[in-house]
Length: 282
Ligand code: KIV
Image (cartoon, rainbow, N blue to C red; front, side, top):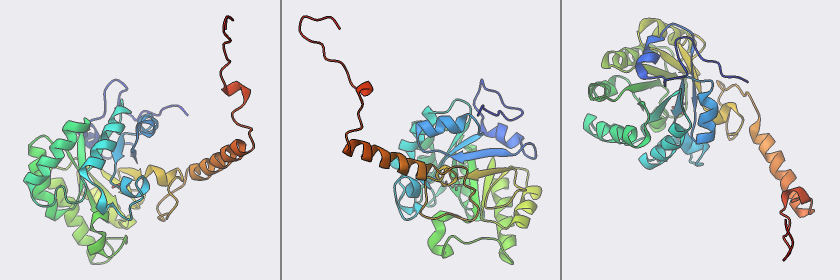
């Protein structure tokens, strides 16, 4: 499938945070996670943003949650992803424990992420209580994508990966959206927020909303790449649409290889190299 460049973007220069912000209310923004160079290349051809999400802890490293993800992991995968991008913007998640303590701690770690990976922006979780940090980073040259609603790094305080923003909680999520907008975030991820509330937030703030499990009215959508490709199968959230079943295809390919090796069907003559006998030309 050929690349589908969104309106207002060009192949000759990468998307930057102000471009994304300026596309509020226009054609939906397309975001996918990526963790490696080959996947980043595929994402780059079709998406506006390649998000190096801390979901990599679960889908790549087999951790039970995102809480064990480190700065070193984010930087390593961030570097791999930026190497594969020529147009899409790289946004890198700040891992748990790297920004919550103070704006200064957040600046130290966010600047390291940008310097060592070449990414354009960071993402961090939190609304009203992170507004001061978002403003501090923005004033010092670090664009921030905020993340509110279900914030997986707070799974232990939230009590699970539940929908956030039903009933009385809705106004708190709305206040979070307004706070990150006022603090200068250039966009905000809404995770597992009811569809109507996500629509109200999208209409009520001037920065793009990127939904995951937040319905069709957001300014853009994001999915975890390994979920939508069927590579991560341990659990499947309701909001994931599977566009491929690569996990099953890979399993079948590995089984066929193992069978071929055991029955000496691989390697074939075409995979080998001819001997050169002494005194004979090749
Ligand atoms: O870590 C991640 O992949 C994310 C997306 C789910 C938004 O934060």
